[in-house]
Image 1: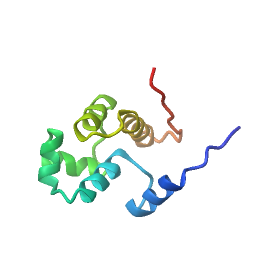
Image 2: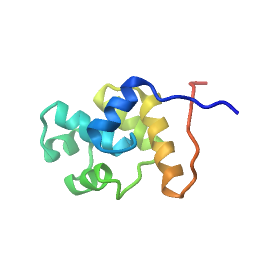
Image 3: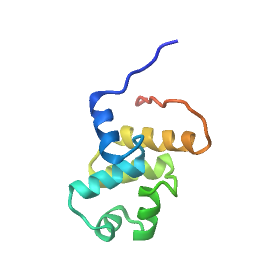
Length: 104
């Protein structure tokens, strides 16, 4: 059995965000880094402010398809956003697996 170590960047982000790297925490970090309000950032994603808040707080899970759309609209890696969305889904149901994806 091999164990994949977290990169220094992931460990740093987890310390900054207060927990495991999730799509919601990543979106919150991007929004705060861009100094955008919840309202403005939600508008750029095409969702409501309350829905974005629920995603950032981990109360709502994003589908891989929606995660890819978010990545496109923000100019970020679709692969990374989809990986985080899938990881969030696994964590939500209590499965402790690590997701690793590659483009086909």
